[in-house]
Image (cartoon, rainbow, N blue to C red; front, side):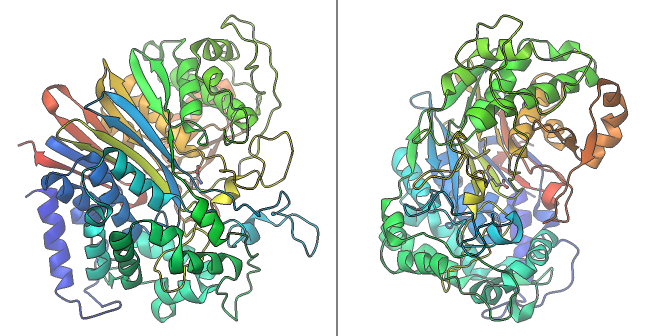
Length: 608
Ligand code: GLU
């Protein structure tokens, strides 16, 4: 039985118990979608990997009907807006990297949220006290952190540039899922519970996501008729109906005067977003970043994301040594140190290029990487934070001059979702999208079925005029999203990406190193335990990584601290999706076997 058929049968069984409207009780099951989840699928004719079987099935349906990777990516993303509403949706933003087989070119779309035109430099200072808002709860659950959403514009632009379907056609599978509902699994319920206090703060959000005052039970069917109506509106009238008119007015009102519950104790600062900001929004075509690594061409997302430059710089640093010849601890030591150095430069130099002169060429220059590699002591971890390098004067020869300031702060969170799609023509879409925090700002636009992002928390929260990521009106906050496409001799070899805030960068980097240097298959490279060195004193690592490598990394001076944060119960880093392109057109779609409850890989024609 194909993964697609298994998904359908499980859904049909549960939906048979469904009455009209709302949440409907179904037999208790530990994870009702478990049997629909396949972490690895191999075959031909197109492939997809997402965190969710409904989204993967939407992409496969589009591919089977003759749509291409761009069409299927939009269909899957829109479906994730239904089934993963706390990670992504039309209230957020993201970045899409696309390999166009006809031209052989990689292009990208920057669909990042932007700061409102009226957002002042001191937006994160409480006007009542003159003191900075706390990150939690004030900034996280607020209107002040809501940026102008870029996701609808990204979908429209992707279809216009590369797709064959209209937006309405691409939204069809998602409208179906929103209307007939999906089966609540443990991950969805737990994410709702993790956000319960924030969701209770808004009448619109508790009405939608806390029906009867509680998180939906595992095994019940969750339907979102408001979101289906929003998608239908976009299907009929295009994104103009999002960026202007009644929906735009509802979005601006929800930010400026959030529908706050009478009995919440949360402070909820209001925001600055207006209908003019929505009308002015554009998704941007950007040139990708490119670095060469072990003879492969690695394409990533240019600023306003720091993904492409930081993954690229770390690969350039690692390209100066042969990891495959090293012992595992030596290779991991180099991975961690290269990552710290690249993060130092990310902090010093990367922001929105419309506002800041970002040295993208230097950061991805192999000579700069070679000079940064001089800082790695093969036997000892450097004291962190390490200072940034000198992007104005470098020659790739040791010793290097340190120029920048060391910066250890990192306030990003760990939500988001990622998807990878390939079609039978060889086109590839790698797309990371988010509403930032799991649950975004917590504010659902009343009657519209979607949460607004809190992406502006990705700005540095303390204003400093020399910081490339300082708040400025109309600016895009620096992202870490790292959708990545790797070509070998001009043809796709690997496409991958992950959620996870700033750990996205290290997850993508570590997965590439695992696959290319450390002899792992793609599924092994994704399953392997992760560690993330973001230029901080301690390395954040999954418990399994600490168990496997903690002892052997101690002699170098690495101190490992377990991952996990105050907002979620999971101690996981990332939730990657990827596709590998093998000889003879064989595709290996790979998703997480365990993280976030396991992802869903599917192919159009499975290998026997
Ligand atoms: N806001 C993050 C970024 O753009 C993504 C959110 C997350 O993955 O938690 O890098």
